[in-house]
Length: 486
Ligand code: BES
Ligand code: MN
Ligand code: ZN
Image 1 (cartoon, helix red, strand yellow):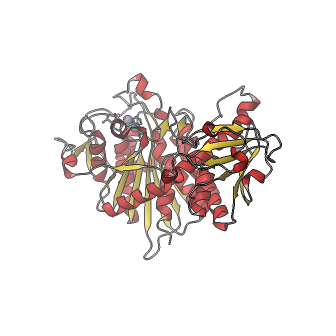
Image 2 (cartoon, helix red, strand yellow):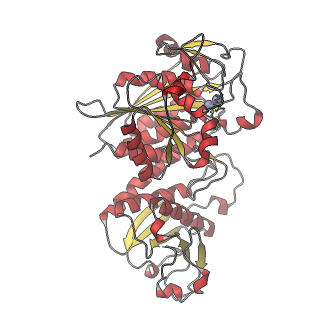
Image 3 (cartoon, rainbow, N blue to C red):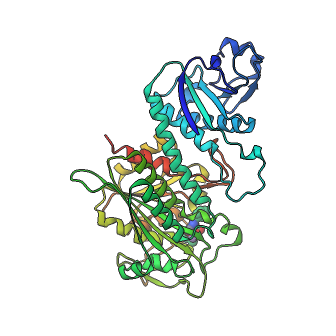
């Protein structure tokens, strides 16, 4: 979508559809007030009222969109409102529309541009690849949105450009997560990384099974051995190490389909398990954003990708694996496979001497029980780093909620016959999973983000979400990475 900015009174700017964002209780402009009964529009959050000014104004349609209480108005509310606006334009089949705020204590222009662009682009996202016979109305594409403000401000357009780059990163992540397991085996995820490297000038290295065997990726190989689709380890590098500059490692779980393996999931729980590479999709989306923005940072993306399948060659409960680190893992449940592939990826990250390791994974059902779909679980070995991620969560609108990573949880995964076991039982399942991961990061500052509850939605709860993949993590990582740029 082309997103442009212009100045002028929104109501006097000719258009087929003008969307006016209005906070609760704000007095509407007189021209608008004259068109409706006062009680018909109060500005409550998500309230919509479509008016036809019929020559009174130079606009064909006027859509009033409530923003809710002015005191509560933030970037997230505007992101959602922008998404609602573009959905309405789609529904009305208006190819180009204008939008503007009224009576709102606005954000700084740069932030405003960014959140509006994100909302517009993400709200317009669709995953139609597999649908045939769509009507022209269902396929209608909004081509242009124009943000109308009272005063000119260069930061607005810059913010829009940034928001569009971020939204493209989110769309990449959504496309990858929405792709079914059969269409996106580990080799295809690797191919997507290579294609991204070529587009964005990143250095991409893909290690195949013989290389994994040679190097001793015992965790990744074990999880991958049950599938006809072989596992891969993917390294993407942006920038180069520099004296006094941070090196940041982003690590993603890339299970392209999680059947549970021999500890097979029940049928109902297996549906949606194509999402189990959501962490790696977020890493790829963020690396694309980084490349497009050409941020002056050294960032390494690491993805362990495999398919977790039951078969005659599958790894078993009771097996003991030797991970890349040399630490041994007793397998109690082959469905706790994410932490096993991540053990190798996190250990590998240490060779970069990273300032921070941020890892994202659809790791546990337990985090869904704890936080539902409204927050990503965060566990950290370093509070300064956790606080930085928390800050990025607030700027990006992607919520995280910190949970403990105490030594007691590490006790819960001690094994009788190996160094650690891969499950600690039902109690504190998300926390013992994080404790497991912490065994493989050495002393490097580490944040684990459990996105099992936030990567995928069957009931979109935000205007810019669509059924399926959310692309969670890309906005958060972008804000996090930008926080290192002065
Ligand atoms: N990929 C799942 C976690 C998951 C569940 C993600 C639901 C998204 C939605 C993970 O590999 C898994 O199966 N975890 C098990 C661990 C258990 C066996 C210790 C779980 O959470 O049930
Ligand atoms: Mn699993
Ligand atoms: Zn999994």
